[in-house]
Image (tube, rainbow, N blue to C red; front, top):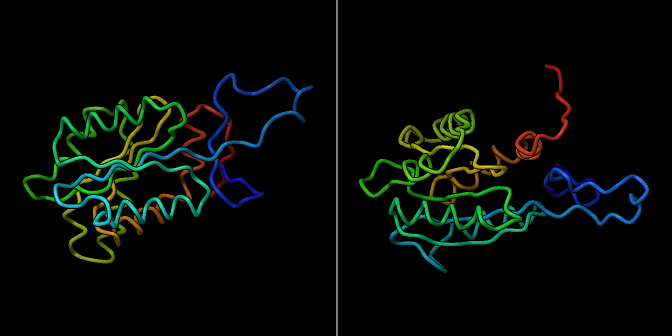
Length: 191
């Protein structure tokens, strides 16, 4: 949900986390959305990981609390990284950058699908359509998105431009998506 005081992103309330009404004034400010950024690459790490750094910067500017990790282009390693991120209590979103193309080592979508409980194809479709509108290479993206428990998992391209554009496309829908995933009442704007 949007935090009107900071302009940043905050997660929906977790079930059972709401205090009784008489304690409303004692409630703490909502925590920021927790995001795990996992860079998938055999060649990019540390200072060379420009897309992971960019994702962290964009998310921090929106008020999210981001952590970063790196794994090789390997199905088992990617799956392990996603599960490790899910084990952290405060993670609402997992963003995997890289490994979404057609090269033989690009296995992020396959690894992600083995962990997802439900796919959210509209996210991947929108990311591809937006990428294709900017470059014909957008057709080569195979990223996926979905839900595991109460976390949203999204594959973004490994290029800084693809990562930036993908986040820009995802950001407006993120608070609503997280509220729905957490089974919170939401308002739907009539179109």
